[in-house]
Length: 81
Ligand code: SF4
Image (cartoon, rainbow, N blue to C red):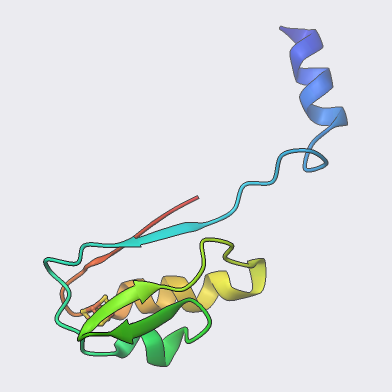
């Protein structure tokens, strides 16, 4: 167990980067555009529904994605790290 911890510590962040992932519950999205306004690099409105433009959410975009999630009126955005 100690060896595993040493290996994890030695390689921390070098080979495995956890990135934020986002998804939208389309059946609940009302297409209000709040997510696109708050995080235009990640969200876009198409056909009156929000879509995720990229699953490669950059570290500097995470704050705006969290903000969009918190401000979604129908709580349709799901994020996980
Ligand atoms: S903020 Fe929520 S309800 Fe509004 S478009 Fe985005 S996902 Fe849909």
